[in-house]
Length: 391
Image (cartoon, rainbow, N blue to C red; front, side, top):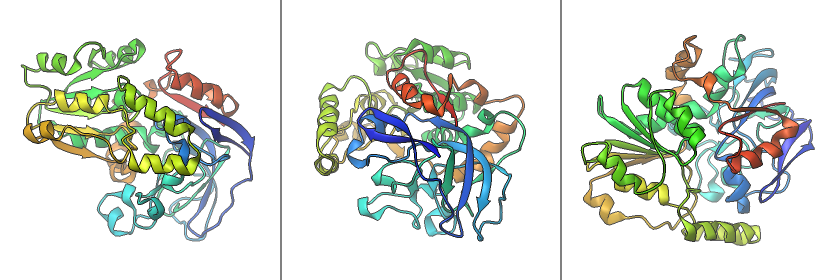
């Protein structure tokens, strides 16, 4: 089959790889009909290269048609249409029962002291072959796949794999008070959906992004937007009675603009041989923290900062005096996809499309065009916000 493979820093290519097969009774094989490029895939493309191996099949936002199931899989069958969460979780361990599927004890990657395995996402998360491919082996398919109706565009349901639940969790973790204010830093796919969910739940949403096309998309949903120019924290305070927003979602993460020293560290780590690069990531402060610093500065005293953007450094400097003095609450982490499925499936299935899932994709491409789309997405060219690949 064809699959998108990682070849090196800023280098991916479509290659012929062996067809997946059932390996465990809890496996399923899914023929992929749509698979999206995620902003966090760009971390593999740029920053997390020390944890990648040449030929890794990437991608963690797939859906498709079930081709075959193992003997222990009973809730789906061949012919069913399913969305595959990016978490590989068992559903029955202590963590899964707590609604913390991203910490699944059955699939934890203990070699790197990481949580649950993910599809297509580096040694840090198990090097599980991903879904930017014609076919996908789904581990723990007795629990993970989300069965969806056989009618309607893939894009109505596709984003249940990551974007919609990640954004929902980001807003739930931010927990603004009823009728309160929510700032969203970054208007990539997660930021767009976080802002829309905030509005859907009745909050005043202020969103910040330097790219005009991204601000325009958010404004279609009644969201107030700001550029990243000037002192963003002060601008947000001016718009919220001088206090700052009740809650802030950092939907940017490790590759924020405005962090030249960490940017140089990214470049240096990416050029090291993999074992040295992995050690550097484990022992150095390599994240660009401009967005997180802005969140800490902007949020009101006693407010909450919710981090959905991915960070990867182990020794990042944080403004602890400010965080302590302002009595800030921090919540963060990879999304627990299945925790939110029951809340979200009715919203994406609603013909009125209250979250605008049919208005998130900006580009559709074939799998063969994926390398070109990675470059376009990474460079924020041509209004690229969300790419859906059609294998």
